[in-house]
Length: 457
Image (cartoon, rainbow, N blue to C red; front, side):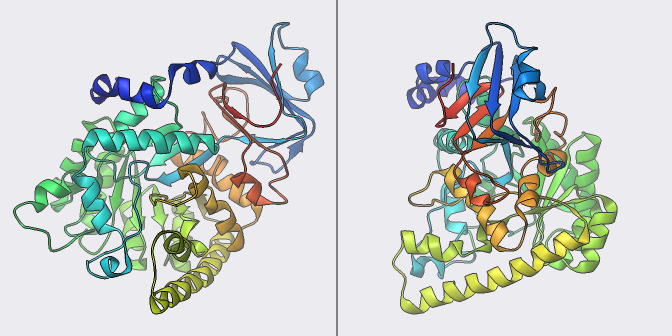
């Protein structure tokens, strides 16, 4: 893929953020041997102990016991000994927004607008300099990578082509970050996110982040417009303003171009429309019915859970960011309690249904005291508190997510032929899923991004 033109202008700025010495230090040795006390295979749940992974030219060549793998390594192999740590595949965040960093608005402001918590920040982002947004995305992408997310799917709110530009810069080695599947502008029905805008300015403002679906021909044209910016997938935000024929036209046109379609659908009616239109994944799915779960399973559609707000994040963010009145805080606590109860019931039904599911952070919020990667990683404990077993959580962000993205031949498992994307934690994530919030070693494409465990030799 050709780097986006924006990077010929921004190269100096990126290297100021990420010095060339730092990038050079991450260069991969031709052959590397990674040793660890344990290696978890999410697909089977089996643990290999002790374990070794032989890496050549950025890809996994062999996996096995240290004694076995060492015999196939050259004499000058670089060995990275992680001691008793547990190795896993690089983590995949299948639903994120790297070019958006929403600051929770004050109490009075959030109640003043339609979609008041979110829409003002979206509008502010839309009128920002595209260069500034991509630079923000570069920082947040780096923070995601530092927390073990070696692949992400960016699903909107990135300007016209900001996530495409960031993807290309990362692929070119200009800035550090995870592999990105970029969706470009989100396809929406009229007035999906904001309402009551100045009628003269509204089309120009909204066009910075969205493509409007207007009829079946308009739906196809929106897909083609995104394709002209070299996106990896199409993202649609579904509500009552988008008809099933329009969504079907989106899916048909995307599939004709070999692109998958991810559909944001919260309400049961929207989820059914996504099923009927043949979506590849349903994002969120908060009010999915049992009958819909059966259809999703039978059609092989993925359900992409977004558990970040399952466990009290609204109150947490606001406590860290704004001053709340007693009544407003009580409303937030009560809302979070309801969210916990509905999440627990939903997770149980999803597990029983047999649907294919992945998990994404849906992180687009400024979280004081945490990097973007640390904020994204809060989804692991949120899912566990909602009742999902650790192995299922790990699968949701490795093997399952890779299949949903169509990248199961590249990422999601520590297997020969796949990219050498590895993370390691000090403890056992099957016993304590919060270990995934404390990733200590990160390797992407055979390059060591972070190693807080044991020095290499």
